[in-house]
Image 1 (cartoon, rainbow, N blue to C red):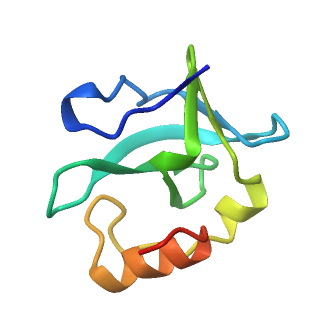
Image 2: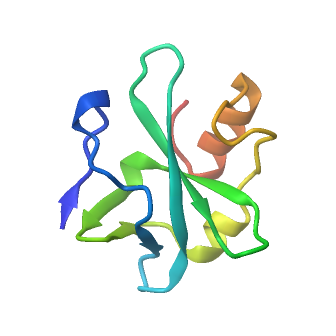
Length: 107
């Protein structure tokens, strides 16, 4: 497994990967990568948790790639209980702050 770089040009093609949690349970499928608007560095992975599930965001810093699988250090429950932004690919400042607090990352 390799950690995922956050630099814009170094991001591997994660879209379509299956995301699994620390216990190996399926969380969903990666559908997009969201960058910070001020630096354009990739910051979040958008994951669709089920056919009818809402898109959730997971910090890219908590992910590692292994082939077609993206492993995260959070549990499936952590992802499902995360705040859901109005538009997953365009975070408002307060939405980013809420997500950072949820995942215990410094804002």
